[in-house]
Image (cartoon, rainbow, N blue to C red; front, side):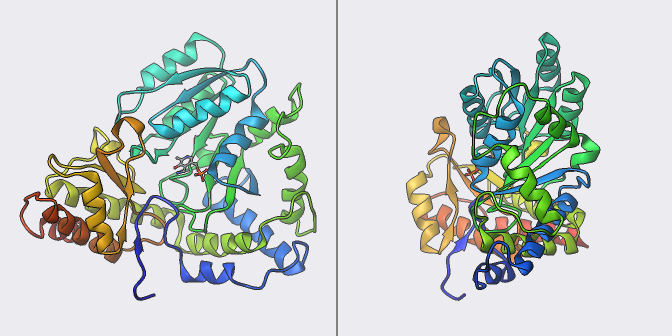
Length: 391
Ligand code: PMP
């Protein structure tokens, strides 16, 4: 693909050629035996990649926001108390979604770049009975990584369900859904799962399914209601035809292909690769004299990095210089800091060569913007750290 632009935003990402080939295969009937088998395989593979062998997977046409909506539409009822642990823009989105379902939302956040403390989460949970707790594993607006294991354990201690927005983390960050007792882990196809945009993906625990079964009221959202989708997922997993809404056939074939690649590589190796690349990239950025948005390095995500512009460097000019080199990164997303930082995605099929190209372009753009640093220091730091890590 000579002449292509290098897409380094935090989703959609660049996809494996095999996944793109699955997208361009002849579209079959959604009840063709070959497709039933692909859909069934994709659902089985989700249980493996999510490390939730007893979880109930759902695959529905839509984006990550639908996955967020579907999880809570099925689990909350009017008047429920819910706790949103927020580390940025997508925590706020969960608050907005939950308010549509007439729940009482407690919104717990922290200064930008930080994570609400476990103590503050426990204090909130102690204060009244909560139905559920939501958390964003990696908030794509800040690049902050939370520790879902500890938050899920607290939710469990206080008899609340836990939902992990893993849109920017599933298949890139460590998640052991069943071992950690997380009730719903949700994502979208276009990020570390490695499939073009269009699929809302989630896996629900047995406890989440029981909570849904024992609802007193109807799910007030027709499209998201598990009553419509559960028989479909069960049918495909049993390799039987079924229909509720036409499934996005090619996207699901691409999902099967991508999950196979991830599973065959091994989820633990995949996660470690993300950690190694991200760590070397963060060190390179620091060596250039730039600061990252998360307050502590150990709270920084491995799927993307949010980076402050150094003083004197203007967002518009910097991004223009980068795009001259055909490297595409994302601008800021937090409204209050929009022009103060940029974001680089490094997940899924990303390679060290992609990151080297990106760092080289960042160095070029910084020079063009009048920022001074030791020439090549970002690139050499990246290579030094990465070589040490993979030795
Ligand atoms: N949550 C997080 C953490 C995200 O990064 C995103 C998308 N960037 C979403 C939710 C929403 O996903 P979508 O844009 O696919 O609706």
